[in-house]
Image (cartoon, rainbow, N blue to C red):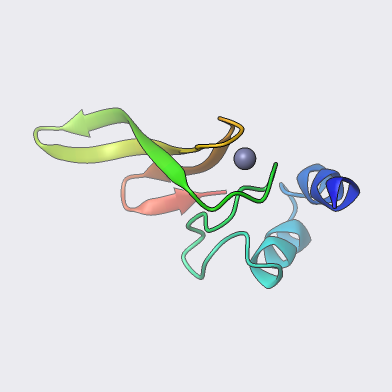
Length: 80
Ligand SMILES: [Zn+2]
């Protein structure tokens, strides 16, 4: 499994990599994180990066097990 995660990480930035992440259930349709790409954990914590008034404009999702970033929310979209 460890090798698969590393392989996914190495191609995560490519279009094909995003499709693979979706296929294996790491991200949802909107690009939202479902499963940690680093360790496979499914529980995350949200860290607010920036807000406009009371609305969160940017936040990041961190894995609760390995503490690595699994997703970035920015102005209404998940960034990959
Ligand atoms: Zn993790």
